[in-house]
Length: 345
Ligand SMILES: NC(=O)c1ccc[n+]([C@@H]2O[C@H](COP(=O)([O-])OP(=O)(O)OC[C@H]3O[C@@H](n4cnc5c(N)ncnc54)[C@H](O)[C@@H]3O)[C@@H](O)[C@H]2O)c1
Ligand SMILES: [Zn+2]
Ligand SMILES: [Zn+2]
Image 1 (cartoon, rainbow, N blue to C red):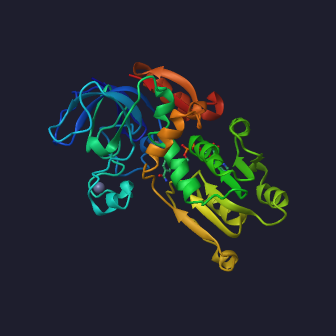
Image 2: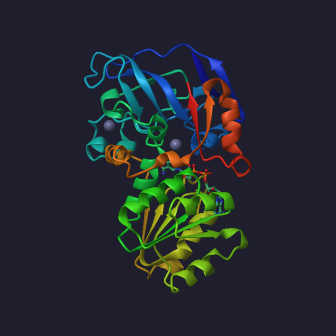
Image 3: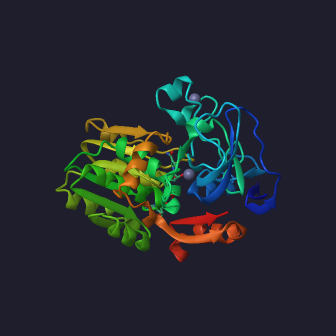
């Protein structure tokens, strides 16, 4: 089969690989129909994710058709169409029982990280019963791919951890696919203002179309002044960090209102300063989270009745044979205006 492989730092290729086999009774082999590329895949290719070693087939998102199931799989049979979660969950360990699937002691984020992933013609899915979701006939499978990772991530790490309230104010730093997913799902709670902050004016235009009430381009260094002015000097109740660098986390520290919350989504590779000298008396809370994908059933319901339109995030389509071009397009988003690219196997 064809599979996209991280070969070495900065080196990647579409290789011919053997089709995966069932290795535990709880496994399923899924024939990939559609997959996509995540910002995290770009970080792997740069060598920033040490758990993911060269030789790995990348990808942790997608939809497909069950090809074969292990003897202990009860919920699926060959031919069933399924949504693949970016998080594999055994369903039984102490963290799974707390719905903290990301910390599953034998699962979590392993797909396209410590085991081969979805950017291939076939993938082995461990714990198939508790890591896949059935797809209803006629469902829009492009939109469904957005539910493997980015919608649960924006919602759980940003919106739920940020405790957005009706009438509350929200600022989201970073208008990439994850920040935009937080923007879409924050609207479930009817906040009064959602301010998007980014350096890329094209992405801010997209944010405006997705329901942002205000957009601030922070490249002039005046974002804090502008947002304090917009909020009567109070700052913002929920500040969501969706970039993953020190400058943007520190911006969140300056924007949070007394009593507010900073919900960090970004994957941070280096240390960040926590300005407790300014924050100790402001009654704030800082929350962090790795996506658990425990909200997927709820998001599937909202998608089914048309209450979310994750398809808005899709800008490009490529066949699997053109995946190198898809990576180039996705990596050069400022030039190509790419958000999510769908890859069809
Ligand atoms: N916590 C989790 O479970 C989880 C899951 C998936 C992704 N992530 C992380 O979420 C973050 C966002 O992911 P993404 O795919 O949307 O990334 P992305 O790189 O596509 O988007 C980041 C956005 O931030 C903007 N940006 C960069 N520097 C900025 C600055 N100084 N000020 C303002 N804006 C700036 C960029 O223009 C871009 O639009 C990443 O760190 C990713 O690794 C976390
Ligand atoms: Zn991802
Ligand atoms: Zn578990």
